[in-house]
Image (tube, rainbow, N blue to C red):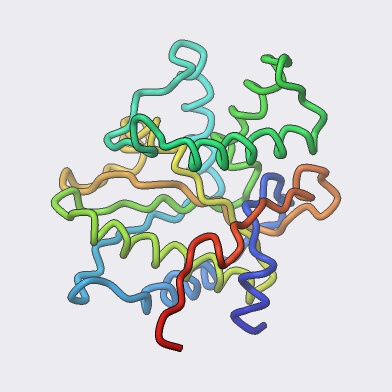
Length: 223
């Protein structure tokens, strides 16, 4: 698969098949993603890959705690700037509305929206969950490094016929995730990534989010 094909076909998959993924393949994807560039070759990422009983235990634990604290434990960073500038807020809003439209959940269907949001914390039934951490001493430039690692991982997954869903939502449960993974104190949870085979029949996977045209974000000078 060409890189351009991987980019064109990559989506945030929100319904996976239950088919298991062998450890050797997950290791291959992580090893390949480690070729991502980083500032000064610092490589500030750390990954935990879970499947089977360990992943189920984490998901079940979060589901139980969600009954008492439905909004989670709070994040250690702001996923969006506060306040969010209108143009970015509008894009995120439309993405959410288009997503719920695929499954027939209207804006006033609060129960339906809550139920779908909670599926984040089942990794949309992905058989593998990868939790990415960044060393908390690192700054903004190094967070970009983790993003490039994640993008590399997701594109390599497409090469193998797999799909992914990157989810900063998992940062809301960083304490609970930490209880299961026991990371060193210097690491901070950045996101979770669901990995598996996409359920092609699931209506929610029909969503293709809008993209700003090149003239909306790029300028060309001196050509």
